[in-house]
Length: 276
Length: 276
Image (cartoon, rainbow over the protein chains, first blue to last red):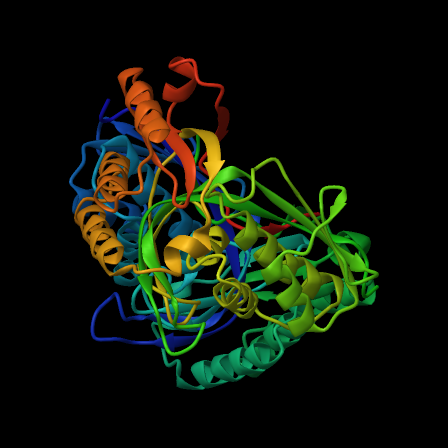
């Protein structure tokens, strides 16, 4: 029955390094870079109803979600549930957008392919200024390298095969739009260098080292982030800063071993999926 | 420690329609088409040891697996475990190849990206003549449309978002090499038509109808397959023939509802993954 409740899960996504690429349209606009999708993510439920969006129990418009509902033109209520903090570099807005597209298409029996729905969500994020590369990574899952920017058909993806526990510590927000809306030439140059390093040696050790290099050279580190990365690494972890939040992510248990009150999850293996 | 036991899971894959594309090399050779990856699949375990391959308890060389071990040049024993019957259109050889590549790279700490390992497995299948499109679909998961043929970077994929129970009934083998090694022009023409139909209306109903059309026009149906498809559909299922086996697959429970002794699984949501 069209309009029945359908849920989709979309993994969180922490970006370690990136470069900004402005195309002629939202489909060719995006980012190159690298990130880790997380088993902690966002569950989006769509059902027939008022055109309202709820983040947990609170009515809260989410710009790319509103764009998708208008584009699909469905009378749908969207419920977004997550344990991840918004605004801290976990790709919550991208996950909400992609989950809305997937669940709404299934609920209302719309005839879209996966790439079309991913493209819709990517474009909504780009237009809203809330992200450039989370959606395509979240659709794929795993540790994702965005080797060419943009939506499916424009962009290209690769990945690093890896299994690992991941810890994360969100200390404060950073506004994505403030950074990617400003002067990004130098940042993008550093991001491309980090990507090349990882492509030439696609291992998790190299990925984390390239992520630390990027945060340092792009001058995005804060004193609290620097301290947490140092202490986690001294405790045997492998930590870096998540773009864009005052957030540290760590392979292994270095953050909790260093006595931080960090969350523990794992690399997401599957990417975005409809739930039964 | 290099050489420790590492396991990978790769979903089974039933193809509903396909066209053969001979490129200049194995990376650009492959198939267009559509198929469903299955939660029933193949688990491959790689560890340091004699260069032997075991299918369950039996030493059994698998051509693409042997090629991958030689290409990676690792002294590794490969154990392939599956409840799927080989030779019946479930992509067991492709799954064994991809699982071997993923698990061996992790076990021996080799520096390959996901696309490189998928390409290695795709090339090994093409060279061995055991498959043309299973590997790239199995790497992605879900219901996969192979819109351009070949390995990552050459080929292109899309998908149909779907959740469903899938039943399957394997009645006998068909030799892939006999069909894809012979005259394939007419078959490929029908396969491309089916793909176009599904791309213009990416729903599961259209996918199954296009699959039945392909099997009929390519004259691959057998009397037993025709009967099982008819009875499953009359029982409320949505069934077609798997390429290439004397095998029927069905969305929903139509095969068991029609009293066939069929296996029951679901669409695989994740694609190939390393196991913890």
